Amino acid sequence: MSVKPPDRVRMTGISKRYGPIQTLADVSLRLAPGEVLGLVGDNGAGKSTLSKVLSGAVVPDAGTIEIDGQDVRFASPADARAAHVEMVYQDLSLCDTVDVAGNIFLGREPVKRLAGVRLLDKRRMHADAKAMLEKLGIVIADTRLKVENLSGGQRQSIAIGRAASFEPKVLIMDEPTAALAVAEVEAVLDLVRAVSARGVSVILITHRLQDLFLVCDRIQVMYEGRNVAERRIEDTDVEEVVNLIVGRKFAARSARRSPAEAGADA
View 1 (cartoon, rainbow, N blue to C red):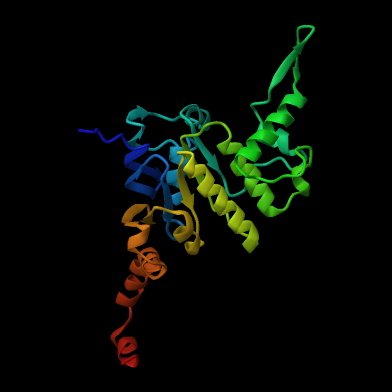
View 2 (view 1 turned 90 degrees about the vertical axis):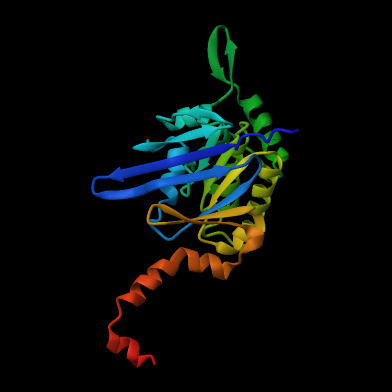
């Protein structure tokens, strides 16, 4: 009898409060190896805070995290990275005045020794960067190009390529297709597919709901810091997802209407 492998990620009872504001309240999340999970919700739903907990940027007040069945505690992004959890933020965190290879290896630059002195190994860095990008199907004419000279889609691809090139188990993407042209969106979604096909578990945070149905296996909906629904992507549609995201808000507004307002619609 085969034994089911543990979830790649299991977050249980995650809570976070900032003063009087409860940002996360007893939130859970699970993610299988190679699965693409769409994490959605209105502004202020807690998506970014939850992802920052998993990436080590926010320390929760309560709750547990497991990676491949092992309990982990992240006090910083470096701790998460050591556990092979990477995050691509919406602002990309790229250095515009640095070239493509330099951005990919930022903080992890290869070095060589010359007469006992440690020097940046630029030749190896550019060769390795080119190989990493080609492996992911990312087309960049020259790794010596400054990032400031690239298109929005290329910049997004570089940010994802950097995160995906160092053997992550989990890759979190925050609004990777925001403000991109249609062709650039397709290229980024192809990259999501390529990464997950290599067994990397992906969390996709997006307001572009149509993207969910192109790359995700499952969605999780959050509302005011809580889980409200999970759906397999084949068991739902855009209309239901919209209702899950905003339905409770609209219901609350409707409940507050006066009898006169209700009668006016009759």
